[in-house]
Length: 574
Image 1: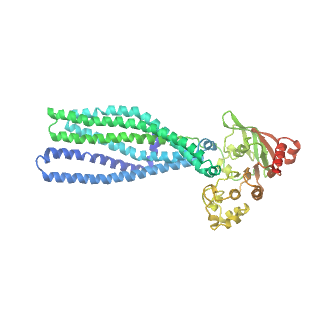
Image 2: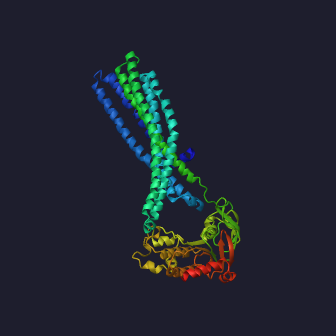
Image 3: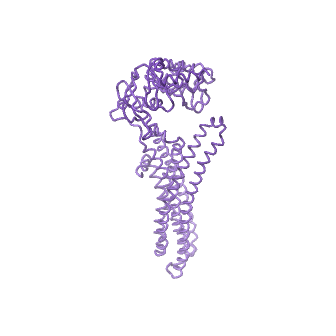
């Protein structure tokens, strides 16, 4: 883990080196005050050497001015370096997230992922900047203070430094407890973020069903968990700081008593040396306290980096070494003995065989949870299959790069996702290099161009988060325009009109009919009236194909399809 963390310093070697040099100089300048204090107490003040007092005082002021500039450099450029490292980690995580499979997102909530990309990386950034700096300054300060105090009285110095192992022992004992507590705190923060993201995204549903109280109750569960985890973390932190602070207070008592005895016995030459020793001990205590306080930041940063690499270690989608890019496909799709499972011992599809001829329309119907959408997800290779093969134009899709495969497949789903951008940008998502004329043509074929032209800003109109300013039918037509622009050989319609009213469905169906023309089309339909003219209809039930044939053939069989059709016909005529 350390090696991976240090790798992020590599692009910033110059700034890091200058930051460390500045930190070294700051720590060395810190020794100036006790040295000058001792000289003044032992020489200049007793001998009334006022000129030297002023000169050394002004010299010390000059050193402090230089230290001010060095501290500015450390704070500014050190933090800039930390932010750049944070930005690089965020970019790496975002690119990695783009490569992860659907299975990862099925198991991880959006809010928790966002927490790792924001809160955790912020803590890592702080550690990246302050960690080396604090370690260097504190270490140099401890070493120089030991050397300087030894010049006053070596044995008294040893007595003071004998307390260090006690401090290290207590820090080591409490560090693990603090680490675990802060990790649980991070997890609780992620739970809150996930709950907040879910509640805000669904605020319209919440208001429509007047369930604000329920959402508040759900949020408070996570909020209470966060509070309890923070209490536990602060308790561990309180134990750590109170115990270590007590030991550092003991330093002052030791210096006061032992130093007085050493002065009384003559082991310390004079009162000036004794005073300088008392002043210099603070030079030792301060870096020790810095290291103690740094432990808290270290725990937060390490915990954040652990959560960061948990994401980075997730296995991304990968093509086979010999997978090839394809330009276009004709669209012949075959499922040969395909079985699929999302969880072990829970198969969603069982030994499914399909043969969808080029340019034909193949419809899937059946009860919810039967495996229809899973079949749609397997064609673009969104999930790995357990057994069998899926072929396009006779080639196993595993031997085709995922990117080139998906370029040839267009998907229109019931739940349309639109970006908080302009209408033009949302259509362009189908093919980013399309011209303005191609965008307009796609919108016309999707029957949404006329509506767009009624808007004051036309194609530049921003549609809000998830297209909140559009109706359901307008969202669907916009998604259809995307697919027209993409112009794929294979089209998947996953209950594309099931959430629309009858009048809107008729308008959308016209656009879909135009979209399907000349393409191999797989349709998942809830309303059977929309797929009566499909070349083949397959009834999917409990993960296998119960029956298949044309609309008339299936009605003649008087099986599951006929029962579904009669039931829906009765419902439509009520």
